[in-house]
Image (tube, rainbow, N blue to C red; front, top):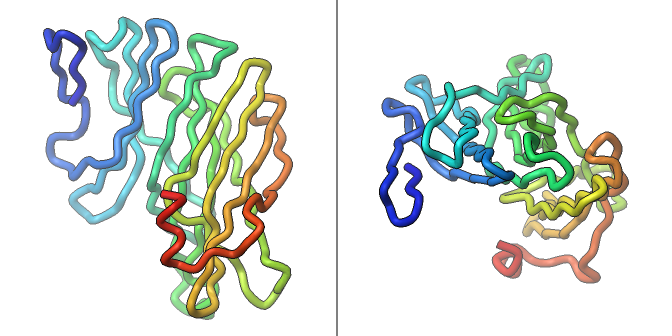
Length: 209
């Protein structure tokens, strides 16, 4: 639900029959985009978006932002929007996707994967999206998992920085904060680069969130 000051205009923009959580909203001129997580009646979690071109007084049709890599069924989580400062009609979106393999014969270590996904939006429609590559802690026997609420900062001239906490799987589990950089509006990326000098234990991860 969105309200504009002094609360003269109130709209419910999400699906009334879905469980809707974790909304993110960005404003760029008169354009307003909202993205949120919706759990449908089958228990699947997707991202939906809606666009207002009049400052939030009216809204277009909900649009589903899909991520369906071959062989996986994915749940999209933790969306974050930012306006593109170089174009009033465009936005940047980053989110996490938890994907389970459809092939039940796959080894356990390959049954689930996390992805960090970045998208460029025209209005609320995803034009182009890329998966930001993972970070390995110098041990090829173990992978890392991006976890929880990616952060994003943008600046004019196509400068974008995305940060995310990666979880190092072996017990007891450790976290490291990594960043990705783009200087061309998300067409190409450098990183991930770890930025904390220590490797945090799980209990210390709360400082990131």
